[in-house]
Amino acid sequence: MDLFQKVDFISHAGIPMTWKIECDAISNDEWSALAKMIMEYQTEPFRAAIGIPRGGSPLGFALNAYATDDPNHKFLICDDVYTTGTSFREFLEQEGHAREDVYCWTVFARKPTTDGVRALFTMP
Image 1: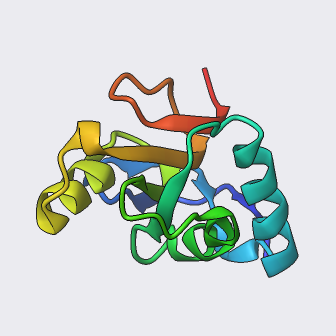
Image 2: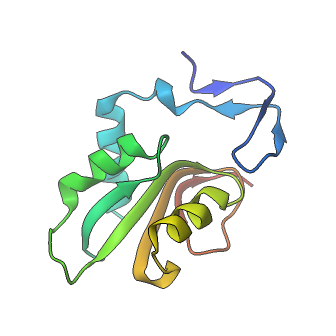
C-alpha cells in the first residue's frame, strides 16, 4: 500500500479530493517515530493522548508512551491528516472538550492550520 495515492475520494468534510494520504500504510514503528518527532515540539506535558477514530488511533497509541497520567494536565487530541479541521471540531464537541483545554496535533496538514491544531508536516 502506498502512503501517497493518486485517487479520487470524498474527504470527511465532504470535499472532493484527487489525491490521498493513506496512513494505513504507516507501520507501528513509523507511528512511534512520528510520535517521537511530535514530542520534540510538544513541550507541555499531557495526561493522555486520544486519537480521533479511526485515523488518529495509531498516533494516539504511540503518543501515550509520553503521557504523564497526571489529572492536572491537559489531554492531547490527535489525528493522522488535517484537511479542514472538521474532524477535530466534531470530536471536541462530541467529547465535550473546549479547544483551549486540550493540545491538538496532526501528522499531515493539507493546508496551514489556523485553529490551534499543530502539524508535523504542512503542505502549502
